[in-house]
Length: 121
Image 1: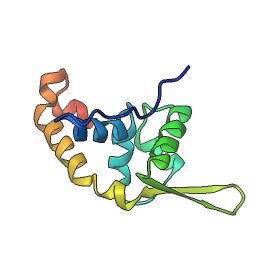
Image 2: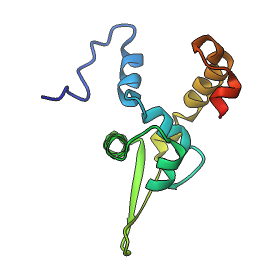
Image 3: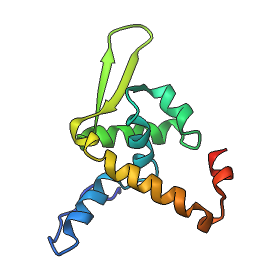
């Protein structure tokens, strides 16, 4: 049995943080959103940009992001199928948050066992 994707929020002081985190929880969602902030990408371009993600996991995370309204998916009627992903207006509103997370990560990555040069490689 899978866990429910979104639970009811209790609206205590941390409720809005809980709600925001529920949308971007998942190992790859914030990384996917960050890569899409540069523009529209096709599935294989996303896979190349995120080498640690499996095809199945990327597909699942993209479906969840689309269902939550953070990304838009466009399918072109050609053979072979062409599918493009881009941030929705709601997803674009997360860009400042993702940039802030990246900046924080850049400043503190040395605390987590990787130097900036190792992280960039």
